[in-house]
Image (tube, rainbow, N blue to C red; front, side, top):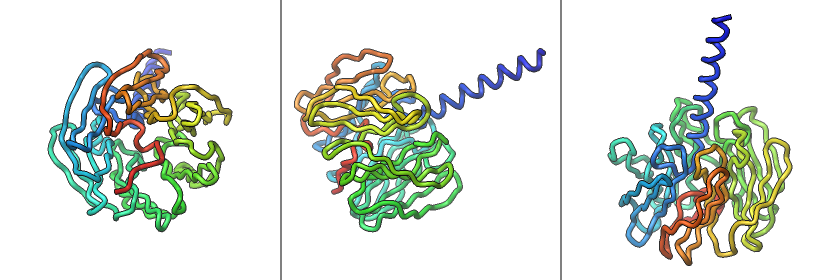
Length: 307
């Protein structure tokens, strides 16, 4: 009896650890390692990253040049996103390690590619990856020892939307096709392909785990009416939330750290952030000026700028 009780406690601890680790791996733009999305912007005019932790911390880091694309992911596996950019002219991945602020550099990609880093293998480090619209190929360099992947999946019009849709702890290769509002997903769990039509012309892709079940939900922000439409992974139903206006930039993320993605928008005309926390009321937060690029949700927007 005592042994079974101890085993039960150990299993409970193990499951809790796995759950926290899984959430941490998926939290977008978490520069502080508190498992919460940080309010953050990249300012092309001075190449500075301005980061405000929701708990009160603040930092400014200089990295990048005009035309660089921000790639804020945890490349070192310490639970914190790195300040990093991708340079299309050279295919260079440049960044500062969060643990010691040392510089790192790698190369992957060509001009015209779209950088789409993610957790494609089972380790805690983000993998470098690009999607090449001209050929519909994905090129992924896995950090967990799985080598490089070259996978055809997509067309020239598609937007890469890699994420963990099947809940196996790995990001799935996926694209959103604007002409038909169709999500095409290649499951990493069983290598099967699925297609789901969700959205309409003009929608901004904002996928994330809004229900907290460990699987990414299809989601879009519709500027024409300011609504968020979220397709639940657990039962394939959907719901709608009014949050934003037509000129807002959607910046979904887990700002309160409860394991659920929160609808949020950045209003460039005001420099204000409006966050609909699933467990916290944030109110209005002023952080930014016209011309700034909001970091959270950058890769969910489906409109990654290509220099």
